[in-house]
Each structure stands twice: as C-alpha cells, then as structure tokens.
Length: 328
Image 1 (cartoon, rainbow, N blue to C red):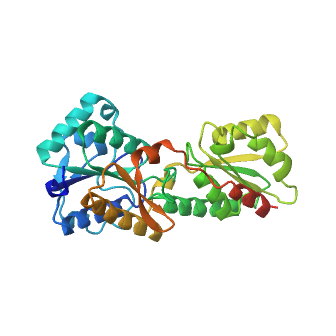
Image 2: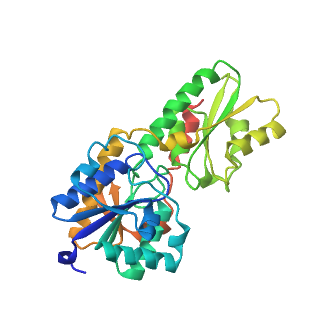
C-alpha cells in the first residue's frame, strides 16, 4: 500500500490504561485530520475491532480531553485477538470500515498483538508506548510513567508522615510486574531506604541485604518500595518473611494498587503524548510501518516492533547505589 492509498486511520488503546493516553488520542486524531485523513476511533481495544465498535472521529470528539486520565476509547483485555480467527474478524471489520492503517496505544502485549496482526495482513501499524511501567525498549520514557511516579511520590510522602510517628518498617508495593523503574525512581524521589526490584531478584537476597546492611538503628522508621513482581515476592511476601526471620521488626504493608494508573496526566506526559501522537501520523506519511514511536534523548525515533518487545529495557544499576548512599 502506498501512502496515497491511505485514507482512513483507526486508533485504539489496549491493555492497562495510562495517564496521557487521551492526550495521545487527541494528537493522533488532529494530526490525521490536519493531513486530510479520515479518523475512526475503535472502542475497547482489539475487542472493539472484533465486535465492530468503531465510530467516526472528528476534531470535536477529542476536545477537552488532554487533561483527563484513563482513555475515552476504553480498553479491554482480548484473548480472542490472540487467535487467527479473532484477527481475521478484526481485519474484516477494518476493511468494512475502510480503515487502511492503525495507531495502537498500549504496552508490551498490545504491541505484540500489533506486530502479529501487521505481519498477517500486511497492514501499516504504528505503536505508541502507553504504559506506566516504562518497560518498553527503545524509548527513554513511556506515556503515563511520569504521572504514575508523581502519584507514588505523593502517596509515599503521606505515608512517611505516619511512619515517622511510629517505629516501623514500611513496605510499599508499587506496580511493575517485570520492571523496577517505578520502585527504583520512586525510592529516589521519596528518600526511601531501599527499592526491591525484579531485575536483581535472582542475584541477591534483597531483603537480607537491606536488613543486614541498610536498615539502620539511627532511624525510627524505614520505608522500602517493592515492585509487585512474583520475583520480589511482593510486599505481602516480604512482610511474611520479616515476621518469620526478623521478628524484632514491626512491619506494615501498603499496596498502592490502581491509584497509580489514575489521575490527570503531568505536563511531561501531556507533552510526550502530544509529540508522539503527531509523530505517529508523520511516520505513516513517510511510509513507515510496524514501528513504535520512541523518545531517545529528547529526539523522536522509530523503533521496530521486534526490538521494542523482545529486548529487555535495562535499569540503571547506579541508581540502586545512589538510593543506598543517600539513605545513610
């Protein structure tokens, strides 16, 4: 398909929602319209593509949404899209609606689905990294990460007020099943004593390390951020271990949960989403396909789906040391 065949662009948000998705929907819609394309919004992610929940989008559909959390297009998990039959239905609905290209806003699973779909039906698809976990390779930051980090910071600041009134060890569980970015940078931003993250869970016993080296007597309370991963055991698992192995400590657990996904996006997330949304349409105009828009040192880049999904994004291990040094 040449660029001249491109007439109608479909947009969907998939997987877990992230603050800034609406800013991205707005930017994609308006840039597409500016360039003479028709736009269709697909509701509930890939599910809506299969069930045909598709609506025409005009510029007013995206008015007054840049400041809203969540996604006006809604999102849903969609096991059917993982089957060839499901993808065939999705493709037939695209053809019926006259959609020639897709912009998919989501995380790892969403872009994996996009890669398979694009290959099967030779479709131009552009991905935008929308996930609070910041775990997509090839981009310094993902849409939603900054807002989630700020939410964690505000919550931990409040917990610290009560923690310092009692002599306790607080485990605060944050999101990040495969990746410790929120826990690690959250710990730095809040002056926490440590971050327990999946990336090094198999290398060291992070709890023993913390209690033997890092948990000092000079402070009356300590706050530790824990990524929700099975590898770390999560905050509940760690608290259980402390009760059994270090019964002298009074432990409290707070699980921040879905509060981290919500809220009005930060300025950084709105700007990032707006820039990436415009870049998605520019990528299609340039004849790009099956790439994710990333940001590398403030420059927008195209990252092939294969690379974005398969490669593990490394954490900056120096930061673990920084947390340790600054908590003495």
